[in-house]
Image (cartoon, rainbow, N blue to C red; front, top):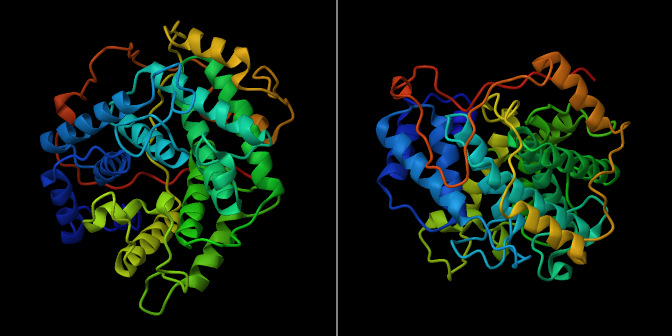
Length: 394
């Protein structure tokens, strides 16, 4: 993805070999790996039968791996590291939702139930601190409720809440996503920074910048966070951190943090052996830096604009669960009409989409995932990670 986002063509041997490796590897029961595979294969742009089949397989796995037990408040609506959703995490949930949004651009749409469940997990997470920030998991927030995590998870929530609002057909879910998005953006404005004060591995620094960029470039594009030109600040920081040989690796390299060792799984170790090799960390940091600097978002279809909100079997139940006191201090119906995001969103919808009368295909819970038409199954010359979004005026 880093190469494709840096305008390296998908015909380049390095890209072609990476795609071949993904296709020839056995799918893992890992939310990380499945999500990354979907994003990499769709960013590659070639819709061959083998690629479409693999993307479909991984998307179906991600959909069924989402927590769906309304009695398990720790996992409902989120994703765990592996296919055992007893405890969902913000990090894995972020990657799963990003992957589903990439897949939707190829016509592989998740059920509406997926977005209904996801917003519930974010509502519960939000109410732990109740200030717009997000924590890593819902079991014991205190052990991971510090700046490196808060910044990462809140920036990640920014992108996921945009995606949920964009793809959900349920007006209530859209409203809830907008409310939570407003609060996350407000927290990032008040606590704005590009460089984290790290007491942990600096992998958190590069993940944070990537998360912040993703949250800003997904529709609608944020040019500023408060009065800050986030992209200029990030670019200045990354250029200053780049090494003479072109990679990004700082003096913090080699430190370990279990929750942030995403690329560890790619280095060939078993899940129980969390040794973060220096070479692997260099690849991770450099890839994240390039993806952040590319300033591109995934291609997003005009999806969900006119779909009727559906009555969901577990949606009523989960709202009852919330009303019983599991979540407090936040009203979903409250929406600040003067919110910068709300204002920008209204302008975005009027200028780009006109009224709310698009077209979309409904996907009922329990239906099978549908592949795009066969006419799309061909190599495409103009493959890539997606066009850069248009900037809104400051």
